[in-house]
Image (cartoon, rainbow, N blue to C red):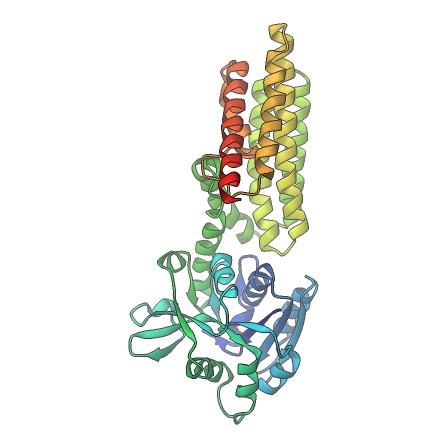
Length: 391
């Protein structure tokens, strides 16, 4: 089982009485963001090590606990060791650390004991020096036994530093911090102003995780712009979900009334809103709403393609456009269920809407449906072939 240990002891720079862990970050507090990453990595139990408890910290811990993660506040290694199962693997996060879910997933998958390290020259990603030229980069994976060893030492020792030293003495492996993580804003920060800048870097990295061609060249650039604006204005996750859903419904009604060009433009706008809203919901810890918006994109893509095919069939006087639409969405649905990692060029619900929109605007709906169907069929064939080799 996985447990998490977050340190929240240091004051924010220039804000007396405010813990760095409770500074705003990504529309929440930094510690809520850290807990969000741990929960997404599979952590089911969370321990927060503190020197003192503030109202802001209590509020953050209360919100974390509502996300179905058991949370305990501890003041010492003895309390932490008593709370965590003796057979658990503990993912440790340094005080004030900003990182990404990709980096934390990778470290959570490491067997204990492992320490994320960075060259001493990379001061922004460093927490504490380990040896000549190497510093701790703020994440470690240790066994619960290490906490018991720390608990046996005098309380005067700094908890965070002692955990690190015990892991080093136990021969923990050094895991180099990837350059991509540094570019994504990984590092320790306790200044509210600088933390806001790192928040934008992390939000951009979150948007960049979608690697399909439609996301890479169209949706992700838009989301990278929209998401920080939504977070900065503290827009609730449900608002983007409602906006995306309402726009999608209007798009389908417009298509149903026989207007392909404006209907597909509205469908494309709906996908943009739902895509950004899904990431915002995930960031705010609402996995259910995030999944619903991803499913909404799929449903919108299917219905818009079928309606587009029906419109073209009525205009052409034969069933070819509708058959193409039906065959395309079916191939797409099957391809997405093949248990292989999608390649960047594979078809998806979002790419289908993006591909069909310019053809609908140009009055070449049947040609657009033919190309979208060909794209889906090729993706299905490649996915099946990859699955066969994998098996």
